[in-house]
Image (cartoon, rainbow, N blue to C red; front, top):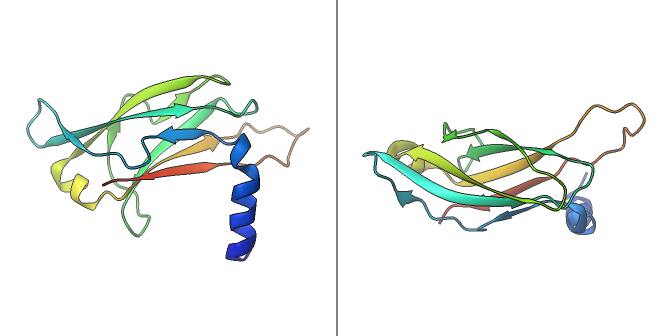
Length: 123
C-alpha cells in the first residue's frame, strides 16, 4: 500500500478510532531516583474493541522497556481510562513514541476488522 492510500485510510477511519492524550507527553520526575513517569489517557470510540495494548518505542520503532499497571488495558465503549507509564532515566533518553493499539478479538463472522494504532511523541 502506498503512502497516499495509507494516509487516506487513516483519515477515513480516524472518526471510528480511539484517542490518546496528551499528544506530546512530557516525562516527569517520580519519588524514585532514576525513574520518570508520564500520565496518559485513552478514550475508546470503537464499539467493536474493548482492549488496547500499550507500547514504548525508540526512533527506529524498536520496543523500549517500560512499566505500567497494565500493558493491555480494558476500556469500555465511550469510556476514558487514565494510566501511568514509568521509564528508567536511561530508557527515557531513547524513548520517542508511546503508542496504544487496539486488540481485536477473533471472530469468524466479522473478519474485516480494522486494528488502529495511535502514537504520542515524547517532547
